[in-house]
Length: 181
Image (cartoon, rainbow, N blue to C red; front, side, top):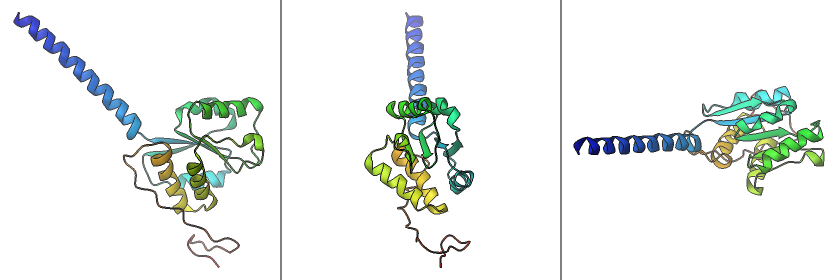
């Protein structure tokens, strides 16, 4: 009888261990894993500015070509630049399907109404757009933090994002982004 009790305890322990491991993996993926942001149709200088402004190790950007839209399921957020974006009807359908399947997608500044794809709520859309519209290193860094915390929903390994710093318009800028004339 002792051997039977020992086997039952061993099986129960193994089941509990498997539940704990599965819970740890699910928890890691939900709250702590890296936030992966796909950049679509950004000019190289724009993408470089976004990527280089990021100082958080748990946020990663990747440029994705319009011919690779079928690979979007591996990302936590899709950010596209709509000005001049030339995509086929099939590619547009791939983007829309990704958004319909729950992937957060924003095509910012779409000049073609057919490319105006967004699956964010109105507050998230306005906030992300404000960070982009007032683009500088600080705002791009805060954008990445905002996306991780409030769009992707991952609260670990991230600082609270600061509000958008409004940029002056119709001025000449200095090499220091905080100076203008």
